[in-house]
Image (cartoon, rainbow over all chains, first blue to last red; front, side, top):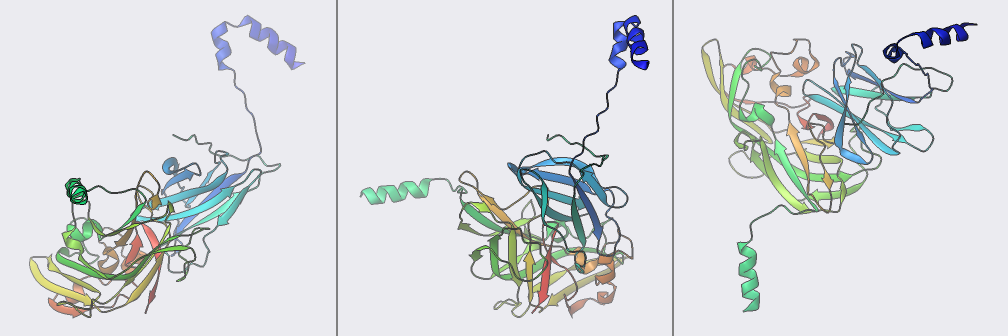
Length: 142
Length: 238
């Protein structure tokens, strides 16, 4: 019942008003979740996060900053191969890697949680998202 | 005669950095060349300038590892490129970028994403027997102190990939690569611009205990001096 009324209303509006239409699509994706913290347990808040794609390993992709809990979630572009992620703040940095295959993300190097003497660590988790709608950040390479 | 002409021509060519080489550099960053100056004073408020930040390195090896070495232990598996010899350098005398070139070797193409080395006592010279010698002036509240701190510790470092403004260690047909030993002197003295309960300040020596001046022997155990840029290393006191 709503659909016809909406159509009539749209026809009566000036053309410029049509630009205010909005569309929302929810797509299940696989994401990478980072968690960076110092060995004291203190979250690495506001740290710079960069990624390097497999086909351009020396070109940084600025992703953003970790949140107050040292966390950051992103969806990488689908380029297959080994991705590299750096997290840096206050003169300290950590690096980790993950593999993106044809069908799935696969974490190949994960920082152990009991890495006692490191100044900071990055835990890296690949999220499977089947049936789950994620709030995620889609970042373009630039 | 032809050989002689070729040789003369070769010597006339400008020196260029060749591709498919890997260079080893070392730095103590700005803290070595410029010292501890406000706001980056020592954790207990001293200003320090260095005349010497002398360090000796041996058993330096660059590695290509797959999967990448995570610096979570002393052993690195991969293709090794050893830089033979011992290198004793004064990091306070580094050039404008704070780095000193130690050696350059022909290298196979690839990503040298791990580095191991030893901080070892010098075998000759006036500082024989010491792996690290810090000599300079410290000032605080009008007090000026000439000091020499020296360590005889022998420490093995096993590090993953360099972390910094750029990624390093890529050797290609078109471009040479670099690997870098980085010493973080703030792990020895601490930093006044960081909280007192910061993990680094908790283990740092500070300078108050050396305020009498003169020469002091120090231990580097528990102090994570060696890095690769901002990246961390596993260290083992030998």
